Length: 123
Image (cartoon, rainbow, N blue to C red; front, side, top):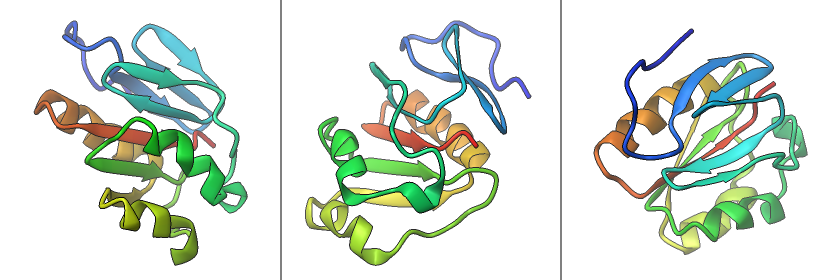
């Protein structure tokens, strides 16, 4: 599914997603990523939501987002509260959703100029 056809003002916008494949800008990615309007962290360690650790979220924290979107794969799966506690303590909003929804939401929020990052599990 293609999300947008125009040229964005930001280098990193999600152009398409299907289970196992993510297109960010002109790049095709097959491993989990963290993306913000001006940053792409490819090959993010967790490949399934059950592999996610608190340490994995530190990379996203370093981007200083107002909101972090956590795309959990084909289905929405909420991680344990303990994994998200650091985000809550840093007063960062967290939204957990399936990866397709996280991609669409990321594009909307970036388009609004919001400080958003998305941690996307591509599986």
